[in-house]
Length: 149
Image 1 (tube, rainbow, N blue to C red):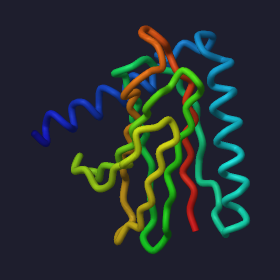
Image 2: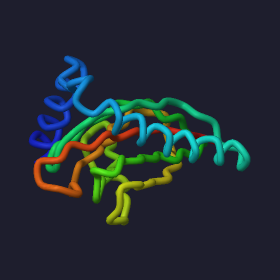
Image 3: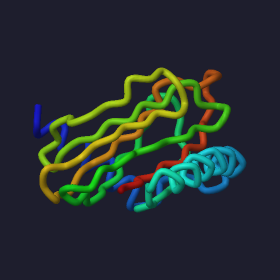
């Protein structure tokens, strides 16, 4: 099972690294998702959160992207996603460097969030899944952020 998980993570990372996301497919959707995420990030500043990284992607139902991130011990992290109006349910899952699931959002919406406080500094994988789109064949623009305090 671990090898299968790591294989899926590796394949997804290759897809992200090769730029397989068509930039002109959902520019408007990514913009909508990015506006939503920026609002959440700015609101977080008032509570002492800082931005570690943000990125955008576009994908269809059943597709996913995996993001590699180093998280530092003793910091608290908030992983946030905003999907555009084409997204009905986006899932967010955090894995350790071995592929073991550590945290998962429990929502059935397009704005999942996970908080996590690592006990050791390490590399982690954050998987964002297009669980359900608003319409058959739709592609959603999605923005993802890692914030910390």
